[in-house]
Length: 607
Image: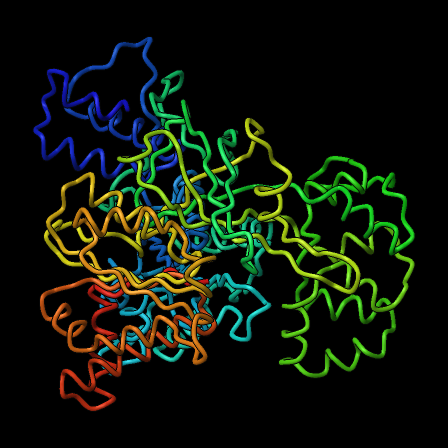
């Protein structure tokens, strides 16, 4: 809001400069904005003017002769967040530092670097995130330079439930080493509860960097400028994962039919007064509390009362409170299964742990309570806590455009619910939002920007959106945005689910957009409405010639939803279309689709 008011004031900046400033500030944290405020203040004081004695001067120190470059390969924002924290900490430590999105970094520049840290998440089945595809490929190519003078470190983020855990980080480590670069700190591979070990690793990494970067007063790399004593930073408060905004629930409405096999909710959350800004394609992070009843059942299973005291981040709280507010107690993971196998002595679990594929499958389909029920085992409070991951927020694709809903945010949430024997199991966040919160209740949220899933800047460009099930969510925001912007570009939506009568999410809205011409074409696939199952990839192939023509016209393709099967099937369908319609062989077709991704004309938000 502060920056929006700049253009209305008598400003020495022109419209383009104001626009650039707004764009830059929109992605900065409050700490970063404060630093920038102090930096510009310091720069303004170097013009030759004499400062009053009672005004504290900016503290200036020369940067090291070398420089640290941080490159992040991020899909959902976690790696970006770790990289930004690393940059801030490096700046405070007086280290000359640059931060790069991997898509903005030219691989050949690695030969000019002295110190590089790569923060990399892993996408899908061991793939590099979309923003890092080009750099990832470059380092494997013959074009990659020798890097004998480069010192580097890699921090990988991933989920150990998946087979290719932290594969992108492992790849970058291997590629840099093969080119002659020397690691100044061993790579670390972090699981979903990465924040504490990431903070410790960052500390070690920066200590190593400072050891090898000699400070020189003659450095021409720039200056580290700290805020003057007593100089207040005029920055808009930014809510983050660590500092979420306490919003209120406006609505939770079931949008699947009475006889549907799925419970999908349209969720509306009030952001009034938060100042939070989001764009179509972004995600909403939701902090949730676990079911107190589930926590009690887990405690009973391991013969604990819940009154035991445990230390969480230096605070002593009851074990029951810790299970509700601090730890993940719904989904299990392979490490947890292995650890409980050792504690319990379960022969079944011991056999499972010997087969990685079966272990991952078991962990992915088993909740914590059911794992603990495999063999009755008495645990201490410390043993139980040692089995559990820390609670992490869930990210949901935003299903609304702020141009349409103003200070609200909408989500499309599938409630995880299934029978386990005589009992019903629920998902942690989805049941919290759908069953345990009532209208007016508080929920802590933050915006997770996703620069890898964005509408084209040119409103005249056509877009093809493929979103079965709850994958429809971001495309509701896309269409709302394009409607409010009076975008001239054509919009083609592919949607799929089980049945037309029970599972056509936002059916009335899509029919309205189709009738008004905002959506030019809508193709649906309801898998169970006929004997032979039909999915979105089949509909895409049925329209091969038209899809190819749209691509020739510059269309962007977006895919959202299940990564395990749907996204792969759609990807294969696109390659087939390019192969057949473009008269290319398979290798050429694969390269064509890969080039679309590099050009950001093929973007995916899959999970």
